[in-house]
Amino acid sequence: MTNNISSKTITALDDQEALLQRAADEREAIFNRYSLGLDPKNVVDPWENPTFELYHITDKYGFMHDSRLPDTRDSQELQRTKIELERDKKWMKMLANWNPNNEKVRRRVFKGIPDRMRWPAWKKLLNVDELIVANRDKYASMLALARKYSTEVRQIDSDVNRQFRDNVAYRQRYSVKQCSLFNVLNAYSIYNPELGYCQGMACLAGVLLLFMQEEEAFWALNQLIIDRKYAMHGLFIEGFPKLTRFLEHHDRIMSKMMRKLHQHFMKHNVDAILYSIKWFFVIFVERIPYSLALRVWDIYLLEGDRVVTAMAVTILYLHKHELLRLNDMDSIIEYLQVKLHKNFGYNDDYVIEALERMMKKLKDLKLDVAPPAKANEFPVRPLGQFIEADIEKKIGRRRSEYTDNEKQVITDVILRSEQNAVEVQSTMSYETSECATVTLNVPED
Image 1 (cartoon, rainbow, N blue to C red):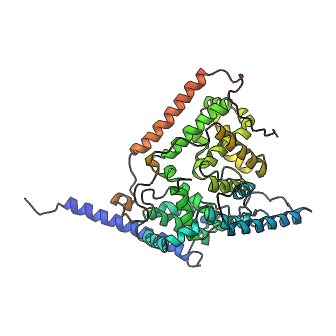
Image 2: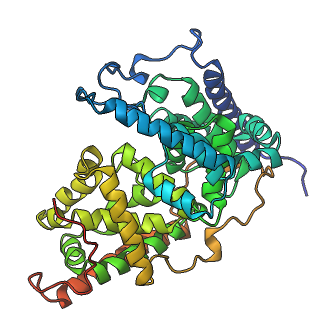
């Protein structure tokens, strides 16, 4: 028996130490850039800062547009401003005597939370202030641990550099909001080690930060992920079990309520996963106009998952005639992913009224809620307890193969497509009348 260690083993250990040190140096360098923020010492490559004409093309939410916005000022603007101020007063009074179960709250949320009231209202709906008090200093400790141990820094940095660059708050590299977004995502990757970081989380946190301070957005994000009303953990966890469950439920609704459109989609191989990822993962942001997305978020924060299910069907219902005229996969996907984001075709109030009716119709049909979640959609590990990553993650080495969960997702998509293809072949032609078609009494434009 020998105590000698082979030269190959020594070399491997040396290489491993070198890789670990390189990863640590890279992490520290990235954190340093965000710590410097807009300091002139923080050198930014020109390509990292997009150029936009700020004046005339920035809307009230801070988003910039390729063409100049029309001048919306008219003789009624003063009256609209007066109405908004009156609504602000009503909301301030209601927030001071907050009861989320009050029918008045529900009615006013569906009417739309005034822009100036969205910050305090969202905090109330997500219990943010209570969480901050109950978890004093937790966010700061998670951020400090992230600076030393986060294995997600590189990916988060890359995504922060892409997120909402058409908004003035995120336009400039290492702006205050970019730095806050970077911090929130890194801290949360440590706080919820089972989940870590997934790309859709940057969009969620990015929206929250447009209305909240850094620590507030952290706890709001946590609520979206772990609170059973929203339970986004199941969307982002490996294998995406909640996405699979919601896609199956979406298909079930389509086959019952909009069979003709469902068959049309299947004929052209348009699986729901191709057009609905951002519907489910980021609650329609970047798929419908931002003002409408905020209205949907208002209702989602109040009502939870059932809003996403209903809004997905509402979009397809309102646009079914145009979608039926499109005869290839690419044009259908472009319509749902690109065109509706630029111009939804209906004003926000009209859409929300249709959404409310759809929610009622789905409830009447007992289709408003997807089948119950399984245990794999919820966190197993304790939150907020630091768990050091393994060597592979620390080094940043990518897996050479899919995990079993990832393979199952691919299999599920293939099986669903095959089943839908069989259904299309066995059903009647499109000229037959639709079965169990929903009627919302929404006039056609």
